[in-house]
Length: 283
Image (cartoon, rainbow, N blue to C red; front, side, top):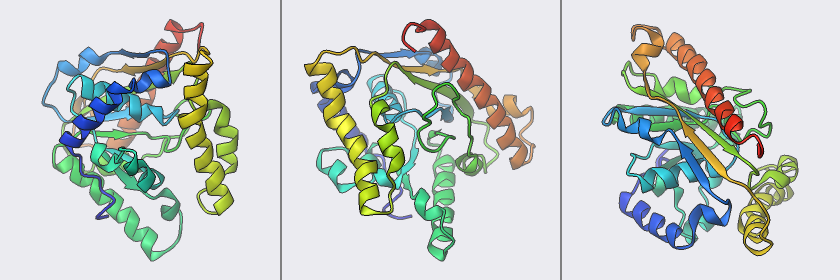
């Protein structure tokens, strides 16, 4: 997976943060970014963490990245779709590999071929390497964006989690919930759904709708038309030792994964519902 495993570059990240702050960062897309629970991450500094979050929007990792860098919280490595490893993003100063992402080609993984098998092995080894090196890790078990905001974590792919829990390390599990009054890509999801990453027309629909939503439609709606686009929310749960979740680290890997899946599903839903209760007039 050489060339696909991103190498986080702190200096590049600092420069990117300064540039994003100059242009207004999330203010381009939302009224405010509201974060709750950040203080919980100061209670156990130095412990390795696996963050587990629901996935509603590209802004999920964008808002987490912004907030963590602003407050000096170690940035987790994030398995991202290979479709985000694009030259056009690098040309506008968003080399996601240098900003903590490493890339997984999910379309390739679905194929029955030698290259697909090798890519799966590379992805597993990359994740294990991250954990073995003591780096923090963020996983979105839903894989792609969940269009149904009323049924978060309605699917839970444990693949990345199985790789991350390969070693019997007593790290912390941290649930995170994202929510939005109005997602940036909300109105374009039907078009994105019709697209694909296989044909020219499919790619135009898939990538074009996202690009239009983020570069033109939302900035125009918020900053020119002055429409109420609402807020972005991130709620961080209490870091919990893996040994507490599994009772004993001698659990088999399958049991550890199942225990973390059940724990994180419950906690992420609790955090999400808490956001809903606080912002019921919007969500």
